[in-house]
Image (cartoon, rainbow, N blue to C red; front, side, top):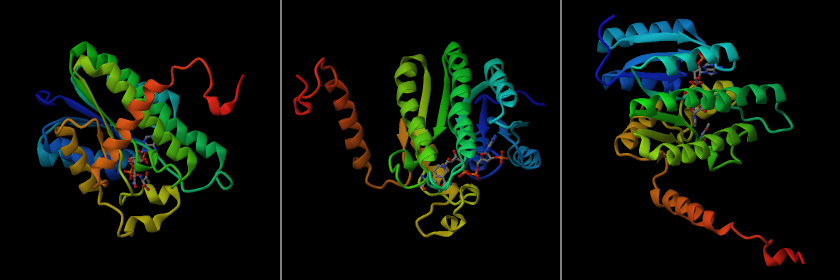
Length: 265
Ligand SMILES: NC(=O)C1=CN([C@@H]2O[C@H](COP(=O)(O)OP(=O)(O)OC[C@H]3O[C@@H](n4cnc5c(N)ncnc54)[C@H](OP(=O)(O)O)[C@@H]3O)[C@@H](O)[C@H]2O)C=CC1
Ligand SMILES: CC(=O)[C@H](N)C(=O)O
């Protein structure tokens, strides 16, 4: 294996298909060496061989089920112990379109394991290592349904709201430590996500974005220093106003008494 790239190594979860596979492609083009994580070993190996041949970067497939504690611990250890890692893309995720009356609660728990627990534990492994080195970047893939929470399955939307909130908090904690955190909110994107989620026709809807366009816009937002990137939102003021109002409200909770309209004596 040749020397590590000056850009360092990017570890991308969910790199066997869809958005994660495009991140892998674009980051390889940018000169990052890669560690690609997902369950499907054949796909990871094929992607690694292809990207290595096309771009000359080092690509290591790392097969892991992020819903399995032992596998997750293996990826956490890589993030903690490999000093060449400069970027973590927390992209792996699963969704559903089922309502609470249709959905299986065990599947919901498995979704939380990947969308929330794995993303959290991988971030907790990477952040101190990046801080110790004085540099690093964490890109967390949330969703437009973090805001438009009624659109899909409630556990999925709430898991993506978690990613958005966690990102705000990480940005505060890591702001002066040389570590960047970007939260990306894709809207409907043409990937296998929709087959797994239970609504395949969304892939070909004329409101659905190509994964390539989504990732190119997200990386343009990263380059521009955005904290939150919402590629499908053309009315960018809608986000900045909402976010400014949220932050302004934060200073209004410090009252020892309930608001007068609750009529608590
Ligand atoms: N497509 C869309 O419309 C949108 C997607 N998103 C988010 O984008 C992210 C990527 O999804 P997308 O590319 O669309 O969908 P895909 O289904 O194409 O990709 C999901 C990726 O996650 C991996 N993955 C799923 N479960 C696990 C697991 N238990 N352990 C390890 N890897 C796992 C899959 O690999 P494998 O099966 O090999 O394990 C695959 O590589 C997700 O977080 C999703 O919530 C957000 C908004 C919109
Ligand atoms: C599947 C998603 O998360 C997406 N943001 C959507 O808007 O449908």
